[in-house]
Image (cartoon, rainbow over all chains, first blue to last red; front, side, top):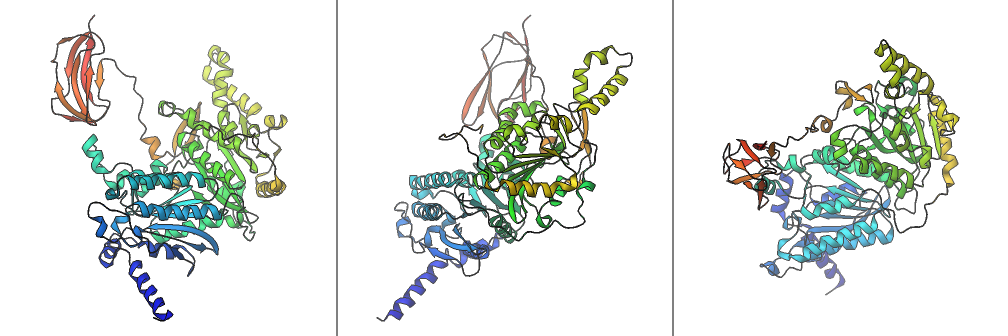
Length: 514
Length: 108
């Protein structure tokens, strides 16, 4: 035999295995409106950049008649490639092969590429499309999940981990995405739940469809499990590429700089924000008035929209933005928004991304439901996250900064590096209405016309305390700036902070209020 | 998203803010102070047995009914010495969570 025939034999073998579950199964996959695992990888990565490993791996099941069966690649494709010319490690579960079910070898392939990603310090992208554990492999499939979860945890905060849910992801399988940094879901395709609708019905008598229980929208809007929502797989891949362009490859690197751009002309920041702190506006417009090219890439757009988190660039460098949104629930902190912001702050801190905080909030949301659901421990997360972050931290107080909310939103007291305030800023223990009622309780009660007295006292309090100058007199804010100076001040603060050196006391790890 | 919504009032510490609500905020469960004379289900399930009748006098700790849920039989017991005022469930009935099952009153 010549070498040529060996090569031809190799090609034949590859072609056979690359068909995955075969034509019929692929047809089914297409009918469900889904791309195949291989198509997904090729669509996401740079052209001709994908290299596959463990193509010839076979399953290891010995029971229930599995020993005679072949499962190409054991239902998962792993490999390396590039996105915008930068390397990534990737795996994609192949639903056409035994429903993408996870057995011993399937898990071994995934953990192999995970180990690789961690060792090489490159991002890991996992595309999930699997019916779950391969029951025939019993405890070996459970072991497989455990090995994956363990590696997710090891890699957390070292390399970016991205999970893409493009099919079912049920039972224990959901915990790998939950342990990763960013979860992407697609309308009608993604399904995530611990127990499916049939179990929920038989045990609890609650009727719910798969989409209502764990569809893309539910996870993007209600549960907060998903960070990005797309209508199609291709839109989802575009989102992943954009995200990759904003984040560094590992915790040892900085995000790659882009060409600096000015914000678009015609976006005037002073025209966006009304002076009356009770009138709303869209904080995203303020963010777009200060970022390069007026571009802002929002994370968790649909979940807890009373706080905004996401990435933008300032002078070409990636910045993480955290901002109250007066347009939704007056921008209050509550359980969900605290959780959302805290997680994002910790992400930025782990990956060397400076944090800019734009503040305008009346405090924490009152209510029995919030108190009973644990707003104390959840609200504490944001304090913890800001306090522990050692990346450059810059705060701009746009309008209200009342009470606990003022402290929580990266105040000087949590070691903000720069605190700027607009002249519209009101830094006070609470809003004038509430404060007047307490401070002047006696005067108001004893007045001939209590309502008139109340209004008078509110005005008095407003005059005296509803401004940035009381806090400025204490040095709690560094400077009162004109709104139009915001971008320039942030740029300068970032420049000054470039070699910031700050650290936490040596410890194994803290105990954040999870 | 937010722009299309009508602005509503949100009162925080006496100040009225114009803003929009989230679905979650609108769907929040209003807190009601529990009435000790009303026994509600604490889990969805099936009433598999009912041991009392209206106007029956019952001692504290006596089992009133069995609520089967999650493959467990939960005994619902009388919280104090008293009387059955009204029964809102039937044997075999499948009930949701927070469903009024029995009204009672204490003996004077």
